[in-house]
Length: 184
Image 1 (spheres, rainbow, N blue to C red):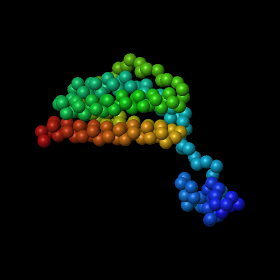
Image 2 (image 1 turned 30 degrees about the vertical axis):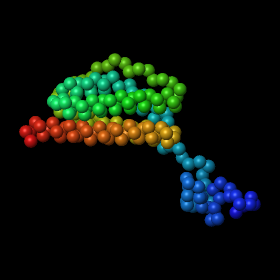
Image 3 (image 1 turned 180 degrees about the horizontal axis):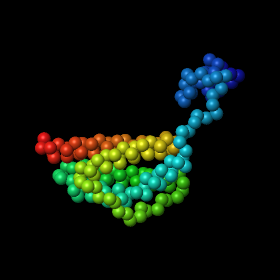
Image 4 (image 1 turned 90 degrees about the horizontal axis):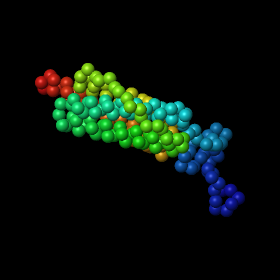
């Protein structure tokens, strides 16, 4: 207890060098000194913003690709699954644009008209989509690591988990298609 009767100073503890607030609870720092502030991120915010710019630039090609997959999907169930993924991707695009605007004060320009390379087949398109989702997870982890606070990290976490869910759905569609082709 300090000289203020009944009050503890921030981080005060009856044990020297032990911090008792919710961030550093129970951790013993060398020389009893807590850091001035905990590290915020291990990736830079500038790198994360550059990755967001690249992620939204290809949105038009992605949209054309998903529409193509929907058009060649063999059944209504497959079309509905791919359409749900496409709709999630539109939501992600809006979320990334919001994050970018909030952190920079600038609005990203609309996507340019684009074209895409048609896959050789529906199966090849599913394979391409599956690996595209897995690649997005890698990129979005770096975006998440560069976000300045929990609010934006949570937004990117939602996008990340959706991408993993999409990869699972494409894996399901790919297996379903391969079984259909083999007559099982």
